[in-house]
Length: 344
Image 1 (cartoon, rainbow, N blue to C red):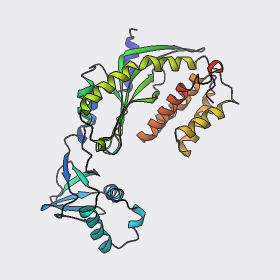
Image 2: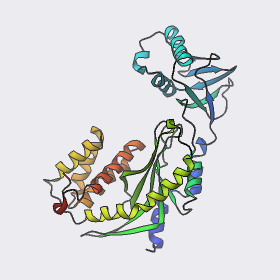
Image 3: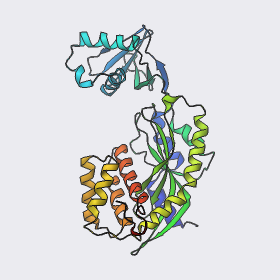
Image 4: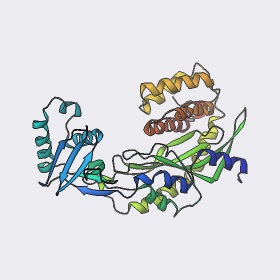
């Protein structure tokens, strides 16, 4: 289907071009890796400015409280426990656990030195993790298509850099009893620059009317970097190709929602089960329920959009992804019960 200029302008209004995306992530490119565990030439100690110092091979590096909490998780001790131990006892033991324990650690260096000549550490990870920049992912995507726009890079960070790609040429129409809508296909990429989480690719749909996103609950591709799988770049290309191939199936699921009427009495059962299945937290549940009440959905398509619209008011990308996946859960269960189309 050929898209109108109006539709394209609507996408351009809210999404990023490739050039804009690369500019947005510039501060997260070119990260150096430093393996520090299992060696005797390093030490860790607190500084006077509520930061921490890593001394390694005659160099000093500075890191934040979040970095210290990550180190604690790597060695398997609760961060709250460290508050009960005097520094003169804690840090020698922490260094011993890192130097002689089974858990290796890698530091990721990014930025310029401070006035004391100390380089900043962006984060820590397991010794098998490695830095994988977003620009490299986009290079692999362009082996499949160069016509894409980027969604979800508003608050990209070292630990969480999830984002979506929307392909303007993959447009679908959905007709509801009230009004027509247009969907644009794409892929959602769950990603951490420092290997904090598994790399995942899922089919992704964006509604034009309200620019809500829906993530398929059927993951196309999952890769845990600790597994040491060879040929990850090729898997990204294949994963994107397969996600694009799955878009027609996802669109048909969404279209089927328009014909499934729902009453106010039935909504609690739908959303309660969906909340439990997708492990939605209490605060997000309340926000979703308020949006559903305000929108008063009459069919499952309205219900899906009521749910995913909440993501516009949430800053945490993992919570946004959870809500978009919740919309995908509704779509995937629209016909679980055969003729009655009741998912539960």
